[in-house]
Image 1 (tube, rainbow, N blue to C red):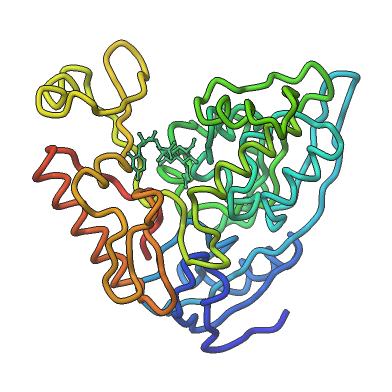
Image 2 (cartoon, rainbow, N blue to C red; image 1 turned 180 degrees about the vertical axis):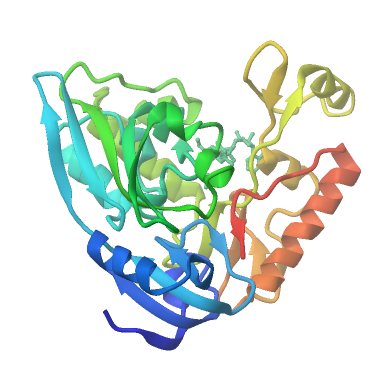
Length: 338
Ligand code: EPU
C-alpha cells in the first residue's frame, strides 16, 4: 500500500472538483482496510468510495482511504433466487449489467447509477420505482474503532427514502466492506409502473418485449436523455432530496400552483419533485462561471469544467433560499457536503 501525499481528488469525485488530500491510500482488500484502521486513528481518516455523492468544498486534511476491493461471489442459490456477495469497490453499473447478462432480476431499474456497491446502502439508492432495500439481503462492515467485522441485516439498516442507519446513528462508525443482494432467477418482479419507463417501452425498438433486459435498456436511455454523464459534465445526480410535505400543505400550494406535480406517499404525506420547484423558481440552466444548474434536469447541479466546490455550494444555497421564500419549503441536500 503506497501512501501518496498532496494527492488531487479531481478524478475521484464525479463532480470533478480539484481538491487535494493530505494523504491518499488505495485499499484493495479487507485485510488492507483493517491494516489502515489499526495504523491510524479513525478521526484521521476520510473514507472515499465512488465519489458519486459528495461535494468537496475544501482540501481534505486527513488520510483519504479509497476503497477499491473487487469480487463477486454466489453465497447460495436455488431454482428461484440467488444471493450474491459483492465487494464494496465494484462499480455499481457494471455489477447491474453483470446481473442482467446472467438473467438475475431485481436491479434493472437501478441501471446506470454512478458510484460503487459499498456506498449503495448508505443512501439507499433508488430510481424508477425501486430502492436498494428491495434487493438488499445484508452487508458486512468494519467498525472503525474496534476493527471488528459486523453484519447488518435489512432491518438493522433502518432504510428510508435516501436514508439509512449509516447516515444517522452509525454515521462515520463503519466501513462497509461487502453487500449481499437477493435476486430472482425466474418469475422476475418487473417494475414498470413509473410513467417514463412505460413511455420508453412503447418505442418500436423494444418490439413490445418487457423483460429485465429491456427495462434496463429503457432506464439507461431515460437517464442518458436527461442526466448528464459525469465523465462529460461533473455532477452528483440529484443534489437535493424531493421534499416530503403534508397533504394540507400541498393543497395550500395548489391554490397558487394548481399544476404542481406530486407523488402520494400515504394518506397524510406527499413528495414534491424538487426539480419542478427549482425550475419554477427560474434556476434551470443557470450558470455562474463553471458552476450551474443542468439544462435538462433542474435537480442536478453541474461543474462545466473548473468550478470549485464552494461555487457549486453557493448556487445550492441560493436555490434553498429562493425555494424557502417562494414555497416555504426547505430543500435538504442529498449530496454530502464536505
Ligand atoms: N421536473 C421539472 N423540472 C425539472 C426536473 C423535474 O418540472 O427540471 C418535474 C417533472 O414534473 C418530472 C418530475 O419533476 O416529471 C420528476 O422528475 P424525474 O422523473 O426526473 O425525477 P426526480 O424526482 O427529479 C428522482 C430521484 C432520481 C431518480 C428519479 C427517477 C431523488 C432526489 N431523485 O428524481 O435519483 O433517478 O427520481 O426515479 O429522489 C439521484 O438520487 O441522484 C437520482 C438521480
